[in-house]
Amino acid sequence: MNRTEIFNECRPLLMAIAYRMLGSRADAEDAVQETFIRWQQSNEEPSSPKAFLSTIITRLCIDQLRSARAQREVYVGPWLPEPVMTEESTVEMAESLTMAFLVMLETLTPAERAAFLLHDVFDFDYPEISQMIGKTEANSRQMVFRARERLTKRRRRFEPTREETERITTRFIETTRNGDLSGLMAMFAEDAVMTSDGGGKARAALKPVHGADAIARFLMGVLKKNEGWDAVHTLTEVNGQPAFLTSISGQPIAVMILDIQDGVIQNLFIIVNPDKLRSLELRGRSFSLDQGARDRS
Image (cartoon, rainbow, N blue to C red):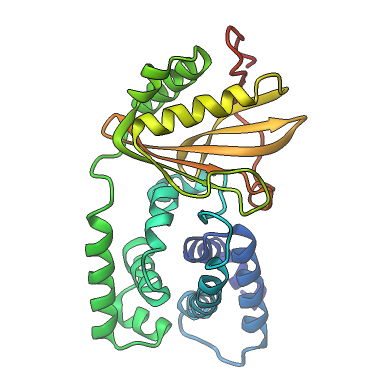
């Protein structure tokens, strides 16, 4: 194979690494393109093109993350990763795509994030990882151990079944449509957290909302304010989790992602920053949240 063919074969892996590192599809695509340019310009003939290309993109992402951290310090309100539609090819890696998982990764340093993802998600061994991130093998092992220990405390113990997910999302639609505040409150864990990202470009809560009562009241308040809007809500899957994509005249204006754990909603992620909604597609079951409205499948 020539270099372009080799690169195209590795492209899905490179995109997967970059998105999980950066939390941005657009930035990930830029990193993949820069990796291609450097690959074409390189005179090396590596024994493992996969490892060589993964090294390039990992180092690009580490550098990008370091500069992004400074930019996020002046970001208006909470920052959330850019949502992506779940594709069939990514289902088996869906857990590492979830919004909750990507948010947890933000607690790691760029090098820790790289080492952890390369080892625990992409199955590279420690000698390869040490070369990729420019650390000793011992340091790489230590970083993965620290990252795993930190994340394990916060990761879900049991993945919800598809039946459980469908039951909870259907109930969520029914309770919000019926204005059932107490029913909606019961769907959330007592210590649930709602995080919304408007980026200063759309109205959103500037701080996370904590607790089932506060979240349910916030959602009901938003729905009441938006009564009369010709909004269509689509039940779909984003980042491997159930989500409601809201659109007006075919244009996405918000996505709400449900993080379900132990039969209740533990985290609710709402993204209304228009810059982060451009790649989302209106596919799934559409419905209205107006009281008494019928499903429009």
